[in-house]
Image 1 (tube, rainbow, N blue to C red):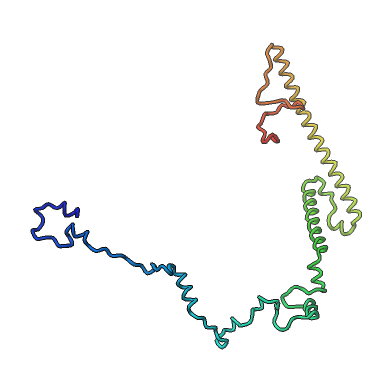
Image 2: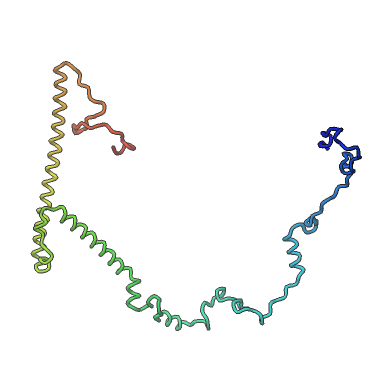
Length: 243
């Protein structure tokens, strides 16, 4: 209607417009009401209609003649107490089955393999033996790598031919090795103590020189003097525990 009003009058034809194109004829057209298939007031959803049809239609039972073997009429064994085919097992049958050897299965009770596989003590003994062997091997390799008396250690042939003499000789070598390590550690401690004393004397000398010049000795704020007299650098402590 807005499109017809916007057209100039001289462009319009002199013939009268059809009834459908007239503005006043659009309001006079009859309105059509749409009716959907699901507008029933009694059954509005498909599920209700299916349920109504199922209740109305009788169900004919399936005859046994056409029943497949996979869906037998009897209750499945998985839903009953009977777990095996045939008649129920007696106590003698259960006892015989416990001691019978089946292929590709675990060993039955009363056999050596069953005792070996189910004994916790022997498994614990094997595990601890393996761990102890690994610990001794690691200690031996570390000892032979760090000691300076590796040439004095008895060989394997000596251990096999003269075990007691080889053990005594190894004990002497290990004692010498321990004394050597103790001497090395003592020397390191003495060297560290001497270094601390030198640092302390150097600091006191600097303080004395500053007093002779009439100046005030100012400590570097980046360092501090510990209880042992060692001058250390100040570092940030994480959680107040370590530097």
